[in-house]
Image 1: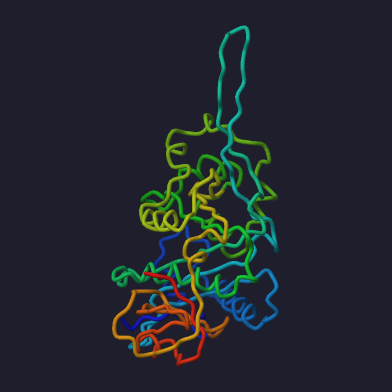
Image 2 (image 1 turned 180 degrees about the vertical axis):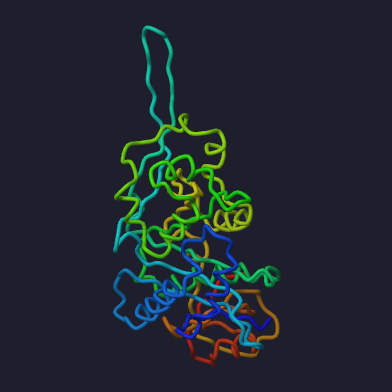
Length: 337
């Protein structure tokens, strides 16, 4: 397999823009807007230029490249600490129980409360794989390479990690959840609000969204049914996150009601189990299938390969060594496939 994950470059704007046009909406981290995507690439480049290993307001953009053709076929993003420039808003589902002595009745109601609980956490997001490449484990390579990046730069990330999954969007591109809440106050459709958020940030939510909890019982049945559910295209991603140790704890996106998955960073399987070692051989014939990565920040590279871990280091196969541009003595990170 000739596919490689690498850190994005400013020259990746056009393929990134072409992929953004394929998302179908509801994809805040990958808006089909050249100015916004340029800002992301510039922010990623600035984060890579900063080499002081301090937790900051960084964004790292990764690209999936077919090294045979040079085509970019996927992308993913890692935010080191969300909610720094403006607050990070979520709805959290909570419950309140009330009792009437006269009626001898106890009633439990569910509420949506606007919170900033997740501010300061790191986030993995912006994951998109070209529709023609959704086979052969490329989605897993793209998703898990982000965890190897975090493991290799652990001081640059927080102790909590989250991933937002796109919620249910209907056939006309609308969101039942947005129509039931946000649309009532902002007088704009879901697509318009989502695009505005992707380009300008969500400070307008703080300005106009009601601060009081919303009773779920007051929402339409259609809206209640989609709360905390991922878009059908995101179900596999949700299972992948769960296998890494993420869980859904009642946090949902304020726009489409999609689930926010959270985990302790050091408990995420692909971070916890990542191994670093010097390369002892680049001629391994057979070994354990693995993701193997090397390089710091702008020089980060990751691919599938074979490994054999020993007390002295790690032997890898020649193809992986060639893709990663490593030789004996170079440091690599890896996790079993």
